[in-house]
Image 1 (tube, one colour):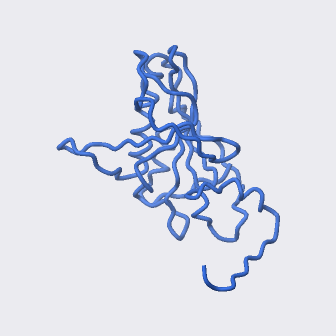
Image 2 (spheres, rainbow, N blue to C red):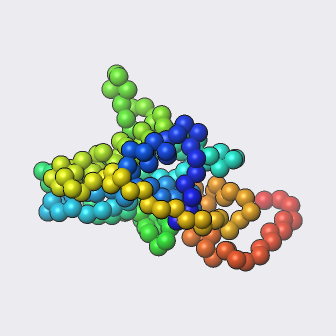
Length: 192
């Protein structure tokens, strides 16, 4: 696993301090999340978000967008109703052979009930995680989204001599592994 980047507003550290298990894969921030299937049985999925990094490799305060990848089966609530209406099915290759199951669009509401953007990465993760994990935690109290055991970080580095901030946006993160250890030259001849 790769080292978690610092966040300008402390969102990542706050999530860790609150007991969320987080890890980084390329330019994705990943959190294991409990959820219920149609039969009400517990499972663990992954919430995955693209990190919004600045030129110094710090996570910016504002998330890239209001959407979130989910790897896992269709989550249900404790009454057997499909969460997120079963919409936004998605099959985007992410990392380590993982492919997204859904790409959800969920915005919080302001005091007037209108949609607004997320203010921090912490707010975005906790909103999505609470919605999906709430029914599982209510039915299975020992099945926690905050296990108070952050996944250990390793020193795996990006194969590039610079922080690659575009692979995740183009879903090319798996190519990093193919390039690791190779010497590559890109020669431009002008134009596009």
